[in-house]
Image (cartoon, rainbow, N blue to C red; front, side, top):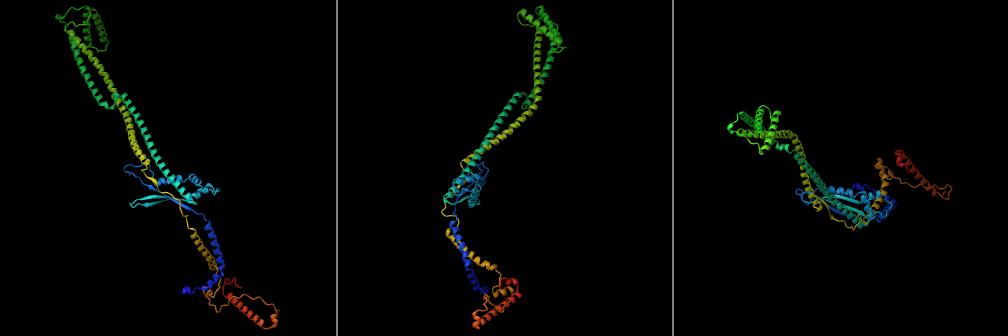
Length: 511
């Protein structure tokens, strides 16, 4: 209450009336400008559509998509692609947004389109602890139909691009693993051929038969020893038979060729005990015996027949010795082959292990590729049937019925308020800046001086000519002049005293 009583409302009302023309001029100017701007402002209509980021409809534990990018990240990629400079300029041209402004450059059109277009993602709580993402796409245009059509066209581009990208990625994954499976299958077939050819070429020196060949080698060596013992026994028997005297009672008449043959056989038996089978003497005796046998066979018309029991025994022993020689030769050749195959087995085993290792590695890669091919096929079907994460339209854009921003009435009301405020500012601001002392209260508040008397400022009276008729006719004008001069003199004295006691800046504009 004391603060209100200290305010001189009359003085401020007088100041307001004094600056009323200035207030009206500023308020009227602002009101006219605001009204014109309200009527001429461009109307913008905003149409919006909403896209839902859906999660996969099939649990990932059972079957998962082969597209690693989530729907939200996928939308960001699509946004960069769809809202590229070329696509934005194509939209502006297709809907004729700047047909009335042909002088705008593509850069200005692109910047203005970005300002008009709004894309914002907002999570929506579904009450189950997780949240879905809804993407709002809005566009402002001067015509509501154009704004709605442009947003719907943009949403269609985004949804088609999403399906195209996800399907293309799933198909590319399927194609890649299909090609990888075919390539690994070809490598497996090639390695199978190499393994088969190697085993066929080294069938007698494979590591899986090394134990059999070693046992066979031992058996053949044992057989050689048995044959050697049997041969020694037979040769001893043959020597005994050849050195035994002839049994006369058992003899039969023979020809000279047969007697000669018997003599050669006895010599052969004796020589075999002294020389080896491949010695020149043994070889020559065998040749002569063979020749005489042919002669006797041709003369008698039959085979060589034993002459007595000893001849029968000698013939049997010779046949057995010949069989032993052939068998020993075969066994020796077998042992040579076995030794060679056993010696080649470690090298073949190394090569075979290398081929088997390559085969196992490629087989593992092939099995993995086949398994991933099955997953890729499942993922492709998920994307083709739209069962994975995807973008779906939940609310299309419709032409708005109201313009964006404040209505015309609200703008006019705001303009009126702004005009009054501007007028008051034009009145109050100069008073706040003005630091002159115009009232006794200001002397007390600023200079802490209590004035004794307040003399109002009186405009000076123009001097009266000295020869005026009023001076000559009477004393009244002179008295009036004297009182006025005295008043003026007193005012000047007060001002001079005030200037001498106060700062000169307070009286800079005073008379």
